[in-house]
Image (cartoon, rainbow, N blue to C red; front, side, top):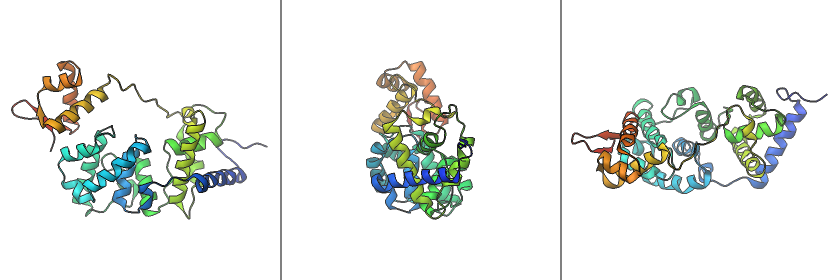
Length: 279
């Protein structure tokens, strides 16, 4: 009798755990955020890693912590300084959310990152999976979660012949296999194993119902928004026409994007009509 993908046998679960741990012991990555239990430092790393590759995060992580060594320093910093430190990581709204989160934690939690993932997930820029990862790595809490590398590992082993697999089918197996004694190490092992699979095989995550392809960057709104940010951090304040010209887009499109960025808390329109980074 063969296992059902959604109800694997104890033997199958044990074999999966053994394979993941064997890979980790042989190929586990030494990364700076794995050397700390400081909740703020772990939080910064998890937000950076949400949509950015490890190779790009490593140098920026060190630079960011040098500029803002604790959550109080981040909360007190001007937004322009935070965005400048974030430059190069992309998806800059994460930097805005991270600063807002720091302000909330200092004002409402005494500067201590909450240990409860439910509370953490209510803070700016922190979803359920990121909250669970933070408490796992900072506090050694048992808080199983699914993200892209974790998903790849489980889809490869337990859903090899399935497509359009929803996370609700994967999560019970994730919870059943998560190490109760060493939840932090198991999380790192899963991340490294999933990364390995995605490098050496057709990405198993493509068989997930939740898999999405990143849209083309060249000519996109994301590219123009990034150009605006770099220009305003460099120059301080510019007109719509100046920003549009620098980004290589027409002023009407620039006006629309600037309105979006204003609503998201990135920029402000000053009394003289110039645009600047928000406070």
